[in-house]
Every structure is written in structure tokens, then in C-alpha cells.
Length: 280
Image 1 (tube, rainbow, N blue to C red):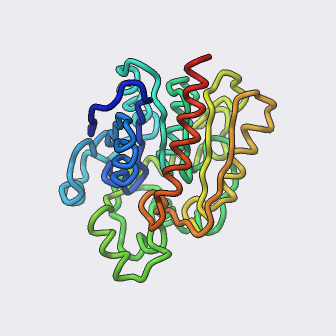
Image 2: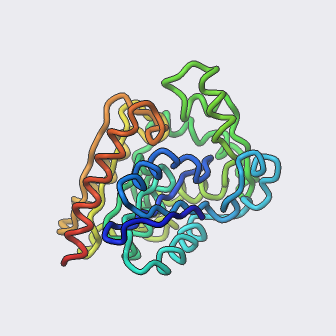
Image 3: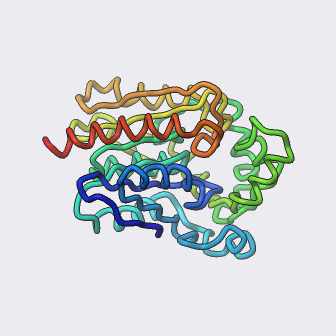
């Protein structure tokens, strides 16, 4: 787990990475927030922890069979050990986990950065289906840890780049999949009450939630973000849920050129609402 000391008057920020990534994917935002006086905690999923990308690729056994609830429980234990409720931000499947943590009341504010669907949200654009196909095509490998090919990385994360530039990023960041996470996420979309990613959309005391989407994201296109926000807001709950779409952004939004604009918006939004939550 990556931590650093900071000005205690500012909220701690917990960053939750997504599938195929490690805490390294948050290096940009983590340093940006630390430079502004925040303590930033960037835990790896169980099995990833503090391991290097090359080590995970060569030995992915620890990733096999781990599901979303186990990952959410892992983050809950870390967060409950903090002296105050933090701001929680999660990217992609990390955004699903962020919503699960929000349902447990663990944060002072939440940001889902291109978050995947939680239970009961059936919006599934064709590019999202293509993203999951290499894993979902083999249900007999539900508990496996399939490698992410360079070609698939180019489609999912590097679609604004040429293949050579995308391949360089694959070398630096990409790790194997937690296949079970994908199967659980898909199954939950059609099982709102019993899905692993079930949340209470009508919860009135949930701290504020921001959903961020990227215009040219193949993995979580804006239609999914809109559907998530609509699901929450249509309940009539007084809890704050807002949407912000960024033009020209891919699924690599946290490190794509111009990431600072998105990070600053997320930080300003979350800190303002966290302060209001803590005051209340």
C-alpha cells in the first residue's frame, strides 16, 4: 500500500484502481493530490498489493478466483483503520468498488471515474461487449487470470494512440485479468437485488457521488455513466449524484494527455462536498 504523510487538515484520498491495472495507474493523480497537501492511499487489489507489473505477469496465480466482494472487503478494512472518512475515487471496475464502498457508508465523498455498471444497470454498448469478450467467451475459465494482449490494450486503453505508443504503455502498466470480476459484473447487471454489485440506489444518507465519463472511452462509454446517474437520481433520494463528461477522453483518462484538468475537477468537487459532509 502506497501512503505518504500530509497536512492533516485536508481529507485523505483513497484511490481504487481497475481491472488490468495496478496502483501504478494512479501515479499521476496521486502525486497531483499529494502536491496539494492530501494524504493519498493507493492499495492494490488482493493478489496485486505492492507487486511490480512484470512480476504479476510472470506469476498471476494470486489473482485467480478473487471476486468483487473480496476486493471491496479488502478496501473496507483499510478505510476503517483511518481516523476519518476519506474521499474515495475509483476508476473503471474500481468505480464499481467505489459505489459498493459508498453503499457501506465508508467515505466523505466519492468519485467514480468511468465506472462500470452496478447491479441492475443493463446499458451495454457494443464496444463494452467487445472489451469483455476475450474473458467472457470462455466461461470454463471463470476463476482464471487471462493476460491482456497488446492488441486488446490498444482497443481498450490506447484508442487515441498509434499501436507503437500503445504497446509501450502496455509494457509499463498492463497485467492479467481477474476473470471472476468480469463474470460477476456482467451477471449483476441483470440481477439488481441479488447481484454481487448490489447497492441501495435510494439510500438517503449516502455521501455525494460524482460520475466522470470520457467521450471516446470504449470500455465505459458515456451512455453507461448516464445510466448510472439516472438510476440513482430516479429514486428520489436526496443524496447528491452528479455527472461530468469530458470531451476527447479515452479509458486512459487518469494518465492521458490533459489528465490534470480531470484530476483538478474531481479534487475540487470532492473536497468541497467532503467538507460539507464532515461539517454536517
